Image 1 (tube, rainbow, N blue to C red):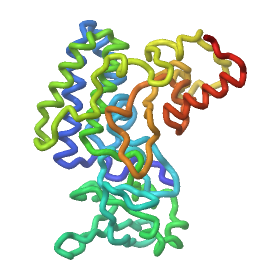
Image 2 (cartoon, one colour):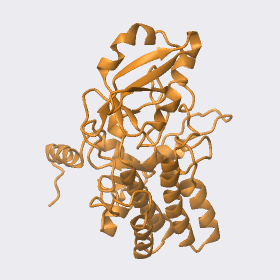
Image 3 (cartoon, rainbow, N blue to C red):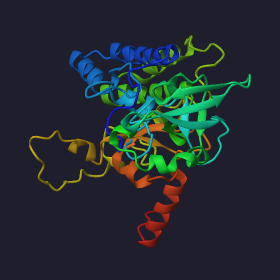
Length: 336
């Protein structure tokens, strides 16, 4: 299966670079608003660091904000998924046609043995065809979707591909993780404001105003009005966990901290045990991501507690609350 980095992870278009730079301006502004020098170093290392790559970089590359807001999640498997990529990446895969993407014309496979490469062919407005090999799909001029019908002619070949072949063709993202660049930037802004306000005690109004001004004056596409209608205005809406409505800096629902059972871990391996704590923060989508609609935006993206995020699974906030209400009533735990 694909095990390495996204193909062409270090290659950005001029527009990609400008978008990431805009997010770096947000990060820099937030760091400047923090007075404590040690906290400045901490937020830059953990959250605000920027990597000019498609996948957020290796190891200590991009920070948590970049990975969560700008990049798709890490994926591996016998499929051409990118192992992280920019959410506005122009080539997506979906089960059905999409309202926000054109269909490619067809797929070809070129090369022999381990050098086989996927070629995505599009039909231009002038009727001519243009080919984009896997390492060049980030250069597509607009968003295109690959559907199940486009793979049919190659099924007998693809099912025999090895790890090397899949890794060198890891070039698509799933449609449900995709969004337009402006919504990725605004999601970055909202998450950055939450981190600065809650964890580093930056004055909310000061950071909100500063960040809003940065995106308002962007020059990447002057025909886009920033902030968009998705950008929130309420401090509580931004800084609290969307499910339990308590601060993301504390325990879920203000409950007592749970004592986790200790299990053996090899001392020679890095551990991510802290990420498994109930109170660790994770990116949450108030309404679950779906293929037919781009929902990764500033209205739908928040930081919340891991416990709350796990409780929601792939359900909406309303569905989760309906479920919890039923369970509480079934156990006679209603407290009026």
